[in-house]
Image (cartoon, rainbow, N blue to C red):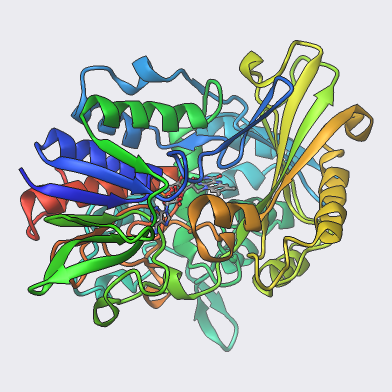
Length: 498
Ligand SMILES: Cc1cc2nc3c(=O)[nH]c(=O)nc-3n(C[C@H](O)[C@H](O)[C@H](O)COP(=O)(O)OP(=O)(O)OC[C@H]3O[C@@H](n4cnc5c(N)ncnc54)[C@H](O)[C@@H]3O)c2cc1C
């Protein structure tokens, strides 16, 4: 039995902790805040309840596996999961709208044909076939295995872009999300649909490799799921599972340094001056300067490049949710190019893409005469934009509400209270610089979308959570927990569970 110190109680770290405890280790989680869950926060006011992180779960299989491997009760016995159908409704800049059914390729193709014109559906369907190839090629060696020492094989983009001949200039193939949109989808609305998926994960469509196509494939193939009570209920369940496996939690315990002895990790030093010894240390957060032994730090791209965060408006509304209201509506940007320049150039966009979440869940509202609605926008991190500026927060929230009003009739008149959360609040919740939200890892683009490995150059020190391989997002962070547990239990030879 080894002593394992885990830094941070985010989902990736807790997933690792539960698995390591089942393997017989003594695991203690040191969390700097007063609660677990990190990004999976909850805001409650006057009977209205909101998630302050993600609102939908993709790839629940990752958490099904965690619950199967760590106890008798399955995921579905611990939380109530329902598929969101339609998965999303899209309002495009030209006034067209389309609702995409959940996890139904034929349904999506038919809906796109009807809304955007004959042929649009099959173009998207053929694109999803190629995206499926990128997904299958990415599962191994990218998603389900620890990052290999030699990463060159991940430099190549797994997306099989269509080869097109151009007069005089030879063949061209899409290398980025934007190029897939322009050259393969050939309809600005389909391109906006693809751009919207990339942006929602914090990826710049102009630079993200075409491999990002696997994100819509993942959502449209495996479905979008809602956790009853909100996503925080999933954090509650993972925490309860950790406690059941005798993982200990110390709250208000900020790790400031990973200590080292005889060339391996030996424990952690805490901000209050205390220190704890450990045989293995798992870092489940973005490292602040000084946390990792300097000569050992080998940052991943995501540790160094500016990464966007999220701006949320949590709306308490009078008036009940109308019958047939869609759970998720994406109001696409009026000028996607201008939005991308703003978000990735450190500014606020004027008419941004807004995701409107309207869960049909009595647990989120005081009664049937009221409704809780969450608006989410991908924005530049805190730093280039001063998200603590009250005037800016108010102006941007107003612009976001204006856009969301296209999706929710009479929205402004129904507002009882609007709570604003920005990357400045995310920074406080997660410790991530600028309140950035890490994107999932992707192969391609010369490895620029990879994260730090789960195994670090310092023996005994591992990394889990969104800032490490295979990157951010609930599903990916859950996978990182499984990979770290595998590496600790089986050693460096671990190549992913079969
Ligand atoms: C607003 C928002 C919206 C999001 N939307 C989506 C979405 O739509 N889809 C999606 O898949 N994902 C989304 N995400 C990302 C997703 O929530 C995370 O990737 C996922 O929860 C995994 O988080 P994590 O394991 O990396 O830990 P985090 O949630 O980042 O938590 C890290 C934890 O470590 C603690 N910590 C940090 N430093 C220290 C230290 N030195 N000592 C002790 N403790 C420390 C923090 O307090 C925190 O509790 C969103 C995140 C946010 C914030």
